[in-house]
Picture 1 (cartoon, rainbow, N blue to C red):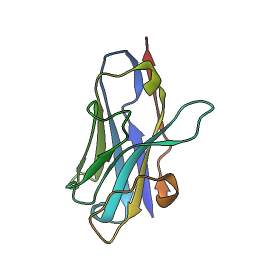
Picture 2 (picture 1 turned 180 degrees about the horizontal axis):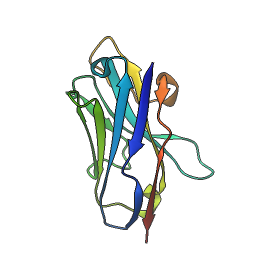
Picture 3 (picture 1 turned 135 degrees about the vertical axis):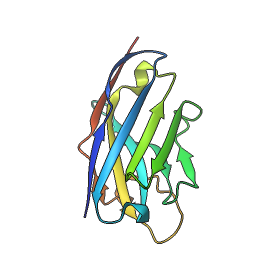
Picture 4 (picture 1 turned 120 degrees about the vertical axis):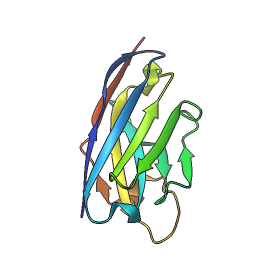
Amino acid sequence: QVQLVESGGGLVQAGGSLRLSCAASGRTFRGCAMGWFRQAPGKEREFVAAISRSGGITHYADSVKGRFTISRDNAKSTVYLQMNSLKPEDTAVYYCAADYRSSETVVATVVRYAYWGQGTQVTVSS
């Protein structure tokens, strides 16, 4: 079992920045590939960014590439999402996800993640 708790969401103006954090507890964090997803009202949950176990591989949705950065600190069992140049269309509940992986890989699909946080709201005003 892995427990995930997101924080750092809030209200920000367009063009601003936020940093989301996801603290993990339970089984070994180092063995997990991690991801961030988001879900806007009336829409399906969508992939945002993913990072491999060691942090050596990252992958981003085209909509956030160049603006968002995913990182992790295995010593703190925490994954981060730095969000810059925010746009109103980035408004959503952001979820952290984890799944154990036997190799250095990234996971970009909802169904392949076993563990999820409760989400944190990000609202970008125009």
